[in-house]
Amino acid sequence: MIATNHHIDKQLTSIIKIRYGYWNMNDLTKEEIMLSVIRCIFFPLFLSLLIGCQSKLATNDKNQQHSFFEMAKRGAELGDPVDQYFLANMYQEGRNGLTPNTYKAKHWYEKSAIQGNARAQNNLGRIYEAGLGTNVDNTKAYYWYNLSAQQGHRIALYNLASLYLNGKGVKSDKEKARHYFELSAKKKFSNAQHNLGVLYENGDGVEQNYKLAFAWYSAARTFDPRVQESLDRLTVKIGDEIDEAKIFASSYIIKFGKEK
Image (cartoon, rainbow, N blue to C red; front, side, top):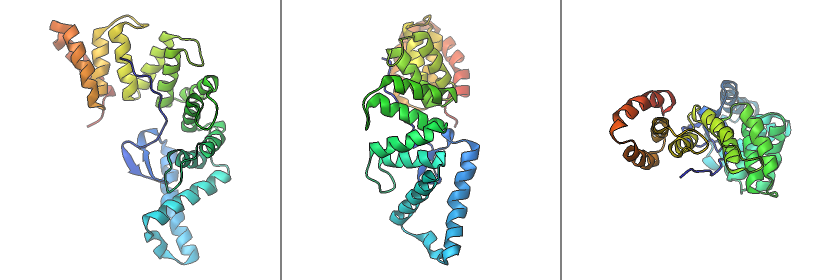
């Protein structure tokens, strides 16, 4: 069964502590990583020296969370799109001691998205699709997902594919759904890899191809053990050609699977 649950960019897997909490390295640009490290390390040092209170670097978690929030809020109000994105994410997820607030999340995502932040564009699309703090508007969801996908954001590519698959906010087009699932899958997004496998297994909008389905399931399995169920089901269908399918899938695992 194909999964079409849409995804928001929470940046919570492959965790590292950087800037305002735990974020996903795969979805940060090199420039943002460097800026985050500089701000995370040098700004608190500078502030501490300025007020003569080095001990503040060893504050407890609650004070540190508040500090992260204040840093993001300050940058967001000055118009920094990355700070606006992080602030919106804090409000949406209720992190850094905040109470979840979808209205404020939407406000700051929109500020960041207008300036071209791909992650904010994706999350704003999700807000419109789900009607979080606003009315459901699939046309606007498509608009923001599409802008984010044009920048290569892998979750936005997946979300855009799902809209095309289900005809939400756009005319149903399974070939375009396959296209965007594949772009996302090649960026190692396991949900897209699994859904692409389902399309090839069932011949849904594409020519049925068990080997390709097995290959994409195999890549997705390296990220999510639950995909094993799909592999087991397809193994029965493939029958005597399973060894050939495994050999074919090995290159997909190497290229698109989880790095060991």
